[in-house]
Length: 515
Image (cartoon, rainbow, N blue to C red; front, side, top):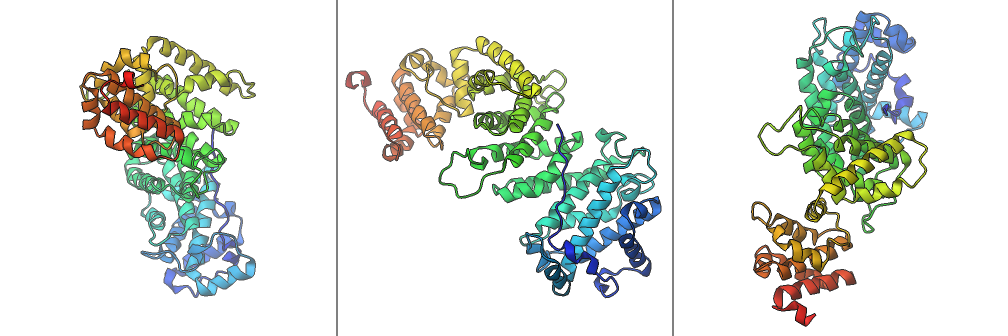
């Protein structure tokens, strides 16, 4: 599986041929630099990049143009706000209204074209990204900072310029990552000079992912997907909380037609965006064997829950394929080669399988195995997950399954939510540390957006109160009574009923007699 990112045309691309370099004194171009720009416009790109010295000079000039035109602090006044491509006449008019905005888009477009052209060359070619953007000693040229400056422009930014700058910078930095081997160059490049800009680029991506807006995804996923082919970028992204941000974007509020939130007015993520998010998570799972921090992030940030919910929502087959593959990698990961450095309990495939069982994946896999799939990868992943889930389930006690379900937040009515179960397991709610963590989670789940989960959480709290010695005092101390009482006036009749019964169990000494 692979994804290739592309940069769409600039809204003002029709004006590029009208740019005159001589009047643009702000760019501080020399005669030689103007001459090379005109030569590049008059000849095919391959001709300009045929000589390594000309290619390096052209790349530096474009970066200089970008640095001078994009300004020190804010995006252009007109061009930066455009979202759709303009007709020729309107685009040319902007050369008089916002010349620097048009030039910024020109420089971004040409830099992207240069990088794409060089990426397509063979590794033994005389002109590569390494020869154009790295010095003879293998160090990244200083002019790269113009690309980073575009990402951090103030105001509302410039979506085309930011997307193009991020994508171009990503391709340039990938050439300097050791994990890419000789893919882009036979020269040895200095990763120490690449690590800082790579960290800065990933930090910008994660800052954009903190927003729930779908537009943020459109801005960064084209850059994130190629970066995730690189081990160094994956580890930096994971250490910066990236797994959690991807997982949150995958949750129901960002799903398209299958979104559970009927009140949300925001348009959900497209199928392609869901696929790209899943693709990034899938690539990150390949670091789970070698990095304890990555496994911890997957376990902590709810990635399993997000992937299982996505599979259950029945999106396109390509989304199902990459989601199942990610879950399979997590289910089979090991902590043998990278145990937890702090001496905490190792997170491995068994831990993730418990999470998957708690999220209801076993039922989903059983149903999916009955369907006819054309993709052999899906069939293989389903067979492996089916075997591992059922083997793990046999080794789990009912309490283990219940705990996994509560920790996942995916509660479903069944034998785990009955009077008989709580008679046998109420004391287990204390937890190994005596902190009643499962009860605390149940109290939190009374605020779940899923009304069935709210009802079940109320029922379980009430049954704990009945069957645990002094359960009423424990529940009240943790604030359960006040929280559940608010649900008595909930709009859903089932939630109302279970909340009322739960509060009654906290207040009545002999609930069985009353019931």
